[in-house]
Amino acid sequence: MATTPEAVRPAGETDYMPLHGVDHVELWVGNAAQASYYFRHAFGFREMAFSGLETGLRDRTSRVLQQGDIRLVLTGTLHSGTDIARHHALHGDGVKVIALSVPDVDRAYHEATKRGAPGVSEPRTIEDDHGSVRLADVATYGETIHRFVDRSDYGDAFLPGFELIAVDSSSTDHVHDIDHIVGNVELGAMNHWVSYYENVFGMTEMIHFTDEAISTEYSALMSKVVTGGNGRVKFPINEPAEGKRKSQIDEYLEFYEGPGAQHIALTTHDIVRTVAELRQRGIRFLQTPESYYEEVPGRVGDISESLEDLQRLGILVDRDDEGYLLQIFTAPLGDRPTIFFELIERHGARGFGEGNFKALFEAIEREQAKRGNL
Ligand code: FE2
Image (cartoon, helix red, strand yellow):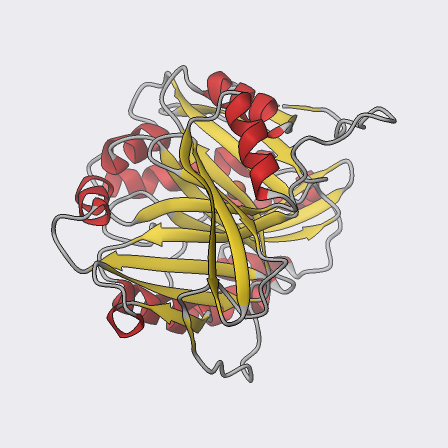
């Protein structure tokens, strides 16, 4: 592992691609109504806006879910001949749009396409009685796109064309923010996409992991993390590395049928309580071997949480120079072994749990073996 301090911009140099953070993540799914039920009842999201037949759309329906500052959009199609139907037939449920909040959509689109990002949709304005939102789209890995969003002239909760739903805000939030979104790309493509984020979005590489650091006997991967927007946006990019058997990245690429978003990491302020609650609701998490916890005190030192709680719930813990972090990974969210969530609670640490990688990959491989894919 190698870490580099976040690049300090020289005085006078302007940031050509200021990013406020991730505005929302849109998943294209087979059944948005049922997916919404699952994300609400399993993970505690609340549905806050809707579009579909009732709002004048004929080909699709979208449900907007919110928890803390996290907005997920679930979109399903109403006809067989749409791009969503084709996308879903190929990839299954997955992330289509990683939307980035920017102060100036036209400038972001112009700078990105000038620097080599393929344009998907030129800047456009959508409006209703509550004001207007400016949007533009560029392509990234696989069929995933980045959508630039400027909602500063808009007074309603999501986007024009959506009908608001009265939200019951009495329940407590379990998760608050998107910490990072990981992309899986083909063997040999990681450096291309790292350069893409550096050149197009002005991001900097903050950490990289070699296959030696994060390999097991059977599978390996390489990972580099790019960050932008003063650390508000973090995109790790994984590629498979040669192992004795198929790596978890290869499995993802096979079943997603191409590169795509592997996991979305959500921050929690009380991972012990959150995981206990989510387990009660039937969420499945990756299993952590018992022996993992024997080494934790020596590897991690003092932490505020009880090791007993962590072990009972399968929560992983890691430490770097700046503090420690707690994390856990769900099983895949859908039928295909592709997208999943990570829950993460940071206590100063800025890493991604690299000390956990080996224990974690052994856990992942046990699941993979059960599916006959190792
Ligand atoms: Fe992660």
